[in-house]
Length: 348
Image (cartoon, rainbow, N blue to C red; front, side, top):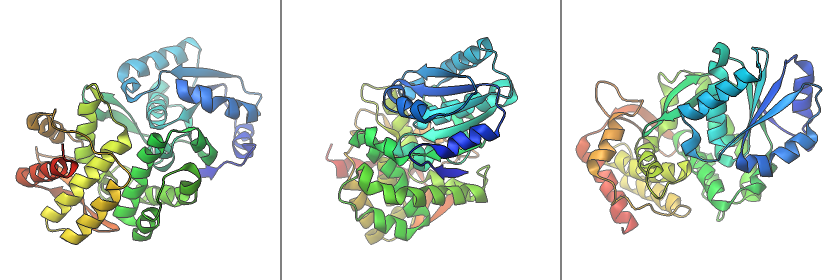
């Protein structure tokens, strides 16, 4: 299902020629419209008519209002169940576009062409689609696989360094939860740039794909992919509605620091292991000031995390570098200690 595209996009053109889609809708945001769409259209060879659907860039667009607008546009353009949506963009586009496709007329086909490192290694893979609800990340969504995922690593050359590092956080996570060698390879990188990271993209994608294959509906082992996301999502949600929103990967990096320390507090890893992990994450990510957020607000978001049951906060935590446990209930005291640890570490 995951295919690396060659220079002339031969594989996607062959796929489209083998199918009988009634119409193609290409979903982009303003950034991918400018930097990626011209290259894509320049290599697109199809007799199927297509339309471009553009939204503003940003996580704040991943909501029910945007989804409703896209449903209405599809309806006005008489999209039928044989139509295809191509999601050309980062995580917001693949999450939102997949959700719109999987719900419109009870589901039409879609493919993902991720253009950011985060989308390539994480968001586009696994069949999770969704939108945010109020302060809560990905609260509404579906499990729906894209028909295909096409990856063109040279799209990464259009990204600012901050966006590359956002995706790098998810790659580090994949190594920490499932592949010690992948982690060790990644921490040898002194700089995160498009050329240096490219050799490791496919391995990171395959790690996630294997976990998803074992547990599509997230009943057990797929929950390990949430390492760093319980605390990370809570902070990301709070920042999203502040004057200083942060990128998903920046939130995950913060979450992995907190949850690595929490893994130590819960006697799952040694202090030395937690320190090695935290030190290597620190090399690439700036600290985020948490002092403006009330403890009550953070815990309210933690309590609403999708992994929870019976009002208990469940975490996916490390049991070693390259291994992870899930559904681990932590004490409020240790959760608070892990957040305070991050605050002291950051110096804010």
